[in-house]
Amino acid sequence: MQAARQTLSTRIGSHGVLILYTLIALFPVFVIVTNSFKTRRAIFRDPLALPDEESFSLIGYETVMKQGDFFLYFQNSMIVTVASLFFILLFGAMAAFALAEYRFKGNTLMGLYLALGIMIPIRIGTVAILEMMVSTGLVNTLWALILVYTAQGLPLAVFILSEFMRGVSDDLKNAGRIDGLSEYKIFFRLVLPLVRPAMATVAVFNMIPIWNDLWFPLILAPAEETKTLTLGSQVFIGQFVTDWNAVLSALSLAILPVMVLYVIFSRQLIRGITSGAVK
Image (cartoon, rainbow, N blue to C red; front, side):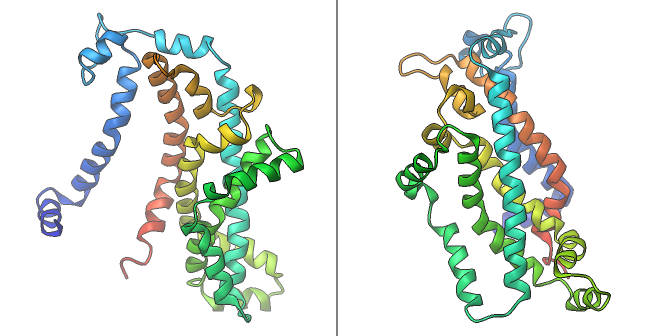
């Protein structure tokens, strides 16, 4: 397999391989979007064909706009995702800076304890989380989702960012201390700008699971005013009948924000993944 990849890279070049892999990854998205503009009969008759004059239809988008408050669902998903990413990056970077910068007894054990969250699925504690949210009165609020997703994303954030922060020059930080900068200013002005690629990587890795999650919105915030886009789309999926036009249209609209955020973070993401691979 490795030899085949090297042969492919040699023949068409690294940029060609990247374009090829991108096209393969985007093909399912292309199929979803094109089928959202077709009639139901055309979807099942020829799912890979482009919509034409006979098969073109906007019935799916019309259904999505009429049935349910799609813009409210979209707004809720955007608020939950952006707020969760903000807290994940903020608290994760702070914890990673403390673990990487300050040596204390139990430093390694603390890092391992935080890393356990990567290996233990948070869904195991769904019942306890629900009881906690009920006791605090946060059920059917967006804060319930934000807190859960923040806790879910922090272990990975600390694990990745701490490794990058250990690579930040100590001379730079000591120079800042000599100039009278506080630890907060060193963290925000010197360290964070240098680990932006790593933060973009953490953001992308957490963004998609949060945006597409169905489990916790269904458990913690199923009310109409707090439904997310993924949960709101389930109204078109029934036990016996599924409105595929509406489902594909809702999925197409849900993909757009993720694609936009991915484009924004893509350059930093690639730098974060490949950082240190070539010296």
